[in-house]
Length: 294
Image 1 (cartoon, rainbow, N blue to C red):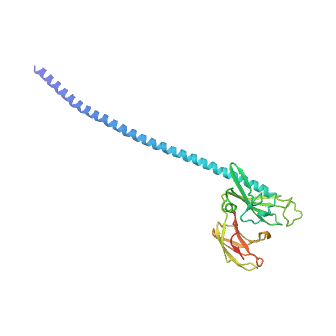
Image 2 (image 1 turned 90 degrees about the horizontal axis):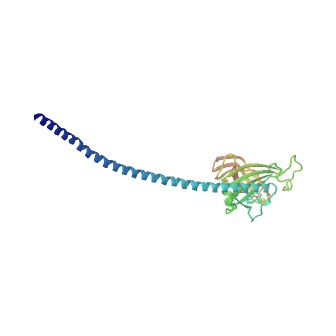
Image 3 (image 1 turned 30 degrees about the horizontal axis):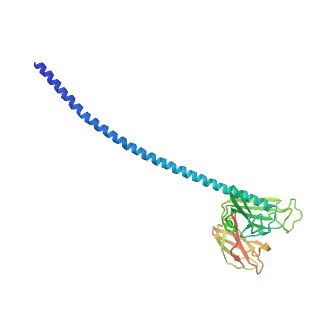
């Protein structure tokens, strides 16, 4: 009897022990399940937000890429058209002496007569090409021509200041071996030799803003200071007769480029009573006619 009571007591204690262990586990497991569900919802929300932001970023990049591609194609088309138009102008002027382009500022049409522009449409781009010629008879560098190409909506003056393409080409108008050389404008021997000196996109030519002093002696030797923009080493300073029909171009001596805005030079001998434009030439082009030296 006592033995049975002992076994019953032990079993009862065991059951209490088991129930004491299992009940907290069921409560713990219930809380754990609810916590896991909440965490899953938060993670899902974070994932959706991150995914949305990623998709929006990719969409923005794709849009930018499409815009950049379109801009690149447009710029490439413009440069290609300017390149072809300039080549046409070079080939035309090589074999044809165009008096209207002599020392022209602003430049003049290259293969037509002003006021008709030298215009051509290529790759859907309408381009105009303008020319200015420096003519030195009796030299193998008979004509040095500056070509500027721009959209046809751009004036000659604006194009010279900010061209899409600027090219400088030297023509030799005398045959080799050289026969009789004269100072007459070429006809049948134009452009027997040609050298491309520069071919630059988006070139910015120099500009001359002031000269000090603005007067000098006919014998030359006056030191002047030229102020402007875009000056570079190797710059050439020229004095061009304001009467361009005379085709008188005199070069300064001892040209020193102080910085991009300042040049000093010594004036050449000049004709009394004649006014001269002062220009600066660098690899990016020649400045437009502006200040006058007397």
